[in-house]
Length: 229
Ligand SMILES: C[S@@+](CC[C@H](N)C(=O)[O-])C[C@H]1O[C@@H](n2cnc3c(N)ncnc32)[C@H](O)[C@@H]1O
Image 1 (cartoon, helix red, strand yellow):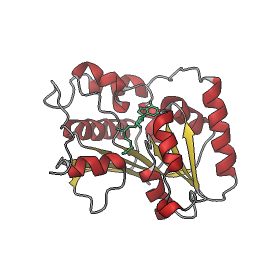
Image 2 (cartoon, helix red, strand yellow):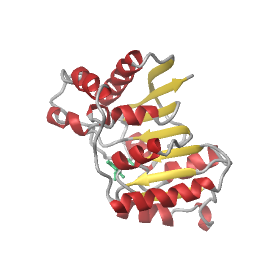
Image 3 (cartoon, rainbow, N blue to C red):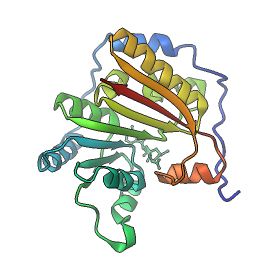
Image 4 (cartoon, rainbow, N blue to C red):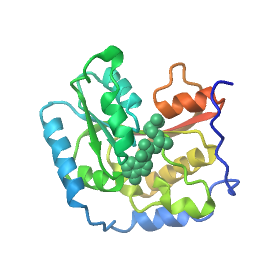
């Protein structure tokens, strides 16, 4: 085996018993969270970038070192592709990452921001997001970490309303099961006509740095998709 990344270890053996209650509670309440001024400024820069395009936005949330952002830019060459991450160190590698020393594709823009705030601002600004990638979010695998997983957080209703096409990838089966469960529950309560799927997959070409690392370490990988009509 080339990679040596450890599989996710958890004291959970299945979907967290508190998840259903949390999802239902947050679906019926407004998430009150003040946005820091630096995030507001970062969002406005991204806003100016997307305004120079006439096409819907592709969002790469938690883009890390940006490999997936570049891959999405190739898949959506006419759309602005926004990579968001809170880590300055990772984003500085993303900025430096180009193919064969070429400049960054013109449709790529990186933003340093806290996702919870960025999603809130994007929803308020009614961004037209045609594809939302959430690749390998931090798993917070201890049972007590449920509230830090995006589907156990008050931001979940905002997250799922941002785009009619959302794709989440993870190397932890329980995270995939929980994310699908939370989507199905929310979809039912919001009366959505949505297609929600979960699949185990093997990437031919890894889309991101973490996908590459997990693939090389022999981990099983999962994809959960939401498609809303
Ligand atoms: C496991 S890494 C995956 C990176 C990338 N998507 C990949 O597949 O290679 C998770 C990334 O999400 C970022 N992240 C986690 N929580 C975040 C948050 N609340 N706001 C912004 N970025 C966040 C981390 O900084 C990290 O770069």
